[in-house]
Length: 411
Ligand code: 3PG
Image 1 (cartoon, rainbow, N blue to C red):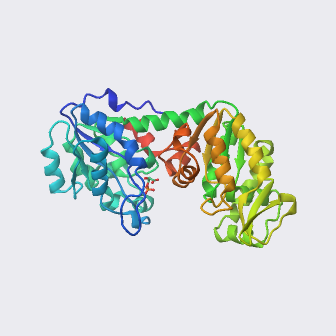
Image 2: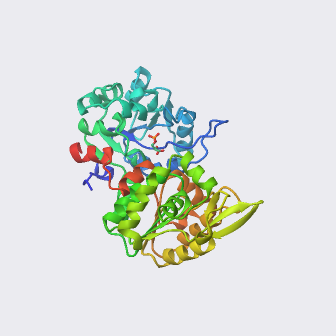
């Protein structure tokens, strides 16, 4: 891990500080209002700390994306929420790096906080731009956002771990031009997740499920290969893919569902992992379907079933509960079943209850994972709840994160 300077060690009094946070939040499709404040809440300590110490603080953030255009809205409501939660004014301007934003930045006084509008009004900040146009570091520094803003500031602080996988100018270009530091949340995220991958208390159990099967495989490949996981317990569609790899026919309906989601290609990957690490991979021993409105459990030996598999069964749940209770570390990604519906939510509910009660270190992250946990348990009972989704998967999978690379190179 790079040794990134901490924002708390910086003298920020009377300095113009540019702070990049990730307060990208789920938005109600009809009202266009924020439906979860989780990331806003986690951004408060760094904002409060910098403003309390007399910084002239300018906060930048993205909301939504090109493909995620339903969530692409101004950051005005974010400013209102920040002000309420901080108990102090947070100014907002519907501009990012144009004349009005620059004028408002120039008149800030010590302790002022100004949130700029959604930085994704600039195409260079969109993830599709990042994917299609690979900028060199020089080109990054010459983007509109960086050219206009960097000269105004004394210091750059990044607290946006959840966007650490994005090689956007706002994330990785300022480190080259300004003295830079990690905010408190970024430091906490790196420390919390490093504990899981660098030195997990044993046995380390990775409970992986959900429909984002490629995330599960990224994590599994790495944690099994590098000896980080003592056990990987599979649930959800990921578990079904392992059943197929093990030669268990699931039935036409479930196999069609898997094919329609373009997941059949993962069966070969599961076969390879089973061949190399069979004794460290937990595969469901029973599953559940909804038949005539009622939950029906089917032992794996009695598959295939013509009805769609929607959950793991009681024997699988009990076996996993025992392993979770005995674990030194539990990392969870992805729900165990279709947890939004009665009858198919049993595995998700029981396993979250087991994780919340586990005596070992517990860590979770990812939008769907956290949403499913929140439905059944108090998040305060989980040891570490990451704000990140994609960045978390990359971190745990051992893939480089552009933000950390930028700090390593220029920080
Ligand atoms: C996230 O929600 O995962 C982060 O805010 C990154 O957002 P993005 O996927 O739109 O870049």
